[in-house]
Image (cartoon, rainbow, N blue to C red; front, side, top):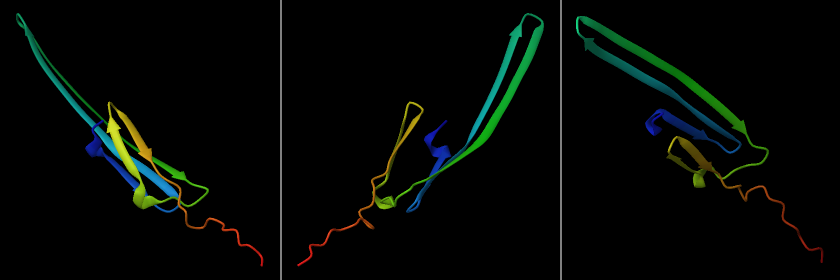
Length: 88
């Protein structure tokens, strides 16, 4: 699958990865008096959605695609963290 066929959406508490794979293959061969034509088309779409228990920092998310492996790094958000307050 090519990286151009993959889309990624990320929000505060979810990640969605989706795309479509298309492949066309055609062959022609001649052996003596015999000829044959071979054509194959395969396609399919995928959709995965993940929900996080805590808020993530969507602006700092990064994705890379190498040798057929998609890697997504999403840091946790510091918003919504509890702060301790000293009682005086």
